[in-house]
Image 1 (cartoon, one colour):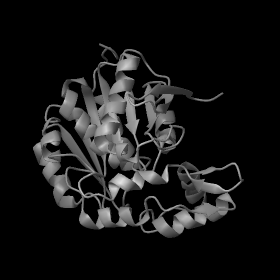
Image 2 (cartoon, one colour):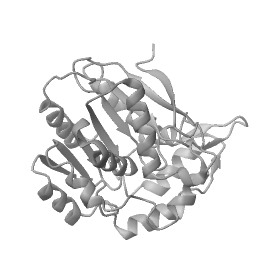
Image 3 (cartoon, helix red, strand yellow):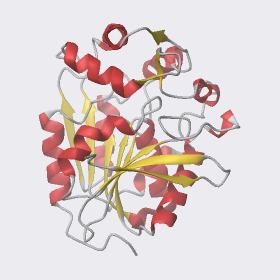
Image 4 (cartoon, helix red, strand yellow):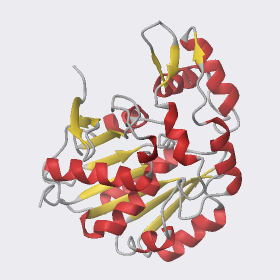
Length: 291
C-alpha cells in the first residue's frame, strides 16, 4: 500500500498540477515541500515517509515537472507564477497555517510566499538557498538546465548522475546514485530513461533576474518572527557561508546547520539536517491545520 495519495489541482492559467499527499495529524499544520529547479516531489519521499503520519506532508511537483502538466507559455516558469500556483492549492485545500520546506528554487518560492502572507507560515526550512545566489552556482545551473539527455538503462543514468555530481555527494555509492537517478529521470514510451521535466523551464531562467524575485532580502525579512531552519552544504556554490551567516543574523528564530563535505543541495537525509528538522518541528505547538 502506498504511503501517499496522488492528488491534483488546477492553476489559474489551466495547468493541471500534481502533489503527493502523505497523511498526518489534523491538529498540526501540514508540511508543504517545494523542490529545486529541475527536481520533483520524489526528492522528498524519504523525508515524508519519516515524518508521516505524525505530520501531513504535501510534496509538490511544480508546473513542468514530474506528474504536473507542462505550461503552454514557457515564460510562466518563474517564481512568481509558482507562488500563484501554491496559493491556489492552499485555497483549494482550505489550509490556513502551514510549514514550508523549500530546496533551492523551492526556497526562493518559500521566501516569496512569506512576502505575500507571512502570517500563514508556522515554520520554514530553507535548503541551500538565500536572498543572494553565488554567480558560479548560477553559471553552473545555466550550463545544464534544459539540455536533454537519454540513457538505455538506469545504471547508465546513475553513472551519468555520479559523474556530474560526484563532488557534491562524495560519500555516495552506486545505490545512492541509482536512487538519485530515479528521482531525476523517468522511463519514456520508447523505453529510454529521460529527464523528468519540461526542457522549456530553461527559457526564462536564462534571462538574468528571472531566477529569483525582486528584493529577496526584503522577502526574507518577513520571516523574522517565524521559526526557520537554514541548511547549507559546506561545499555549496549557490549559498555562500557569508550569506548564510547574514540570514541567521537577520532572523532571531533561525538555526543554521552546515553540512560538511556536501555541495548543492543537501538531500535532507543527512543526520545533522534531520536533527535540525526535528528541532524545528519540536518548536511548533499543535494547532489547527486550517483557518
